[in-house]
Image (tube, rainbow over all chains, first blue to last red; front, side, top):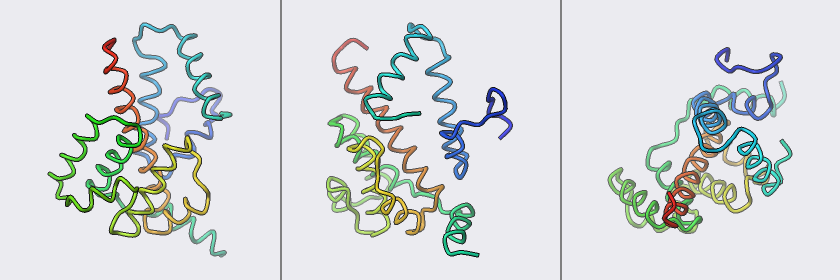
Length: 62
Length: 130
């Protein structure tokens, strides 16, 4: 999976858990990159803030 | 080699692929659970084109199917939506062992995610601001 860029060569568990299904992994990463880093009217901080709010509502500790 | 390890290896080697009509039924189920009627209509129409009978479509409302393995898959899809991703380990294991494997289980998660995105988009657009 060299096409997955990760800082400090660490692969997050949320991505590692997709390893049995490369197609879903690729779709997940593409969607994440588009939403978090693509063109948007939201700033980076606003996007991360939305992510934190949703994660908290879903009881997602990641 | 333990039974658990054998199961793990079988999962990793699984070549099972989810059928198109089951994918469409998962999308229909999610659309109905999230009250997205337009997307539900499109999913039902697409499922009919894919050869799904009306009787099978009606079962989707109860997250059920005539095929026991597909019924398990739809049950997991429903819990992913209603319980925000929390599905009992026993039910996840049942789906894997029913022939979907770990790859198929992730397919179900992917289909639910995609359908949720469309359903949410439909509901937001209905407010007229998108």
